Image 1: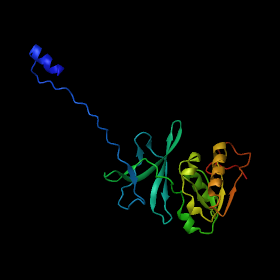
Image 2: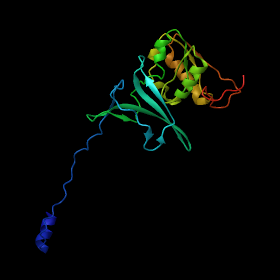
Image 3: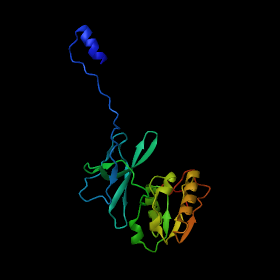
Image 4: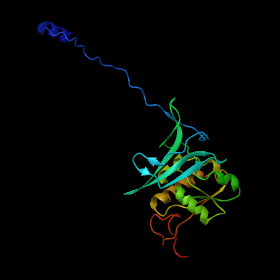
Amino acid sequence: EAAKRLGERYSISQGFRPQATSSATPPAPATFTPLLPVPPSAPEPPRRHPQHGQYSQSWRYEDIPGRTLAYAVRFDLPDGKAVLPLCYGKYGSNPPQWAWKALPEPRPLYGLPKLAAMPDAPILLVEGEKTADAAQGYFPHHAALTWSGGSNAVGKADFSPLQGRTVIIWPDNDEPGFAAALELARILDGTAQSIAIVQPPDTLPGGWDLADQTEPG
């Protein structure tokens, strides 16, 4: 109304129209839904991250029959490392794609096919996929497994496949590792047949795990 009156007073006739304001709530972003297991038609997962560049290592998470569920991908950065989850799914009704996102909780364990292949073997639980691979080499008669997300994500994993199994927990040699081991023992109480925690020797450096270089003897 004010614009109309000013136009009449000063003979302005360019047809000014005030911009309408909308009170509508913007649409929420589409929810990401993982496709599990990853279908055989899925393309190869990306080898590069838009921020971190090309990865140095990746680990495939599988279900017990050996079908792909997701990946954990490591990037070596100038100030350390980053391990990111990578899974396959779709946003809303959009076509499926690989996304740098974690699987929904409870998340599967790394190394599940070993449970069927080694039904009577004790389980060796360690922190980290690289450590689990190293542990499997040291202890071939154990099934070495881990969970995704590190010491702070113990409660986000699905440990139900360890029902009735003998479980040995080998923590990283630091306070977060010991805290995670105690949390694991609490979670597995009533699920595992028996639970033991390895006490690393005092001679090992802080943060040491089975993927690190061993000492002589």
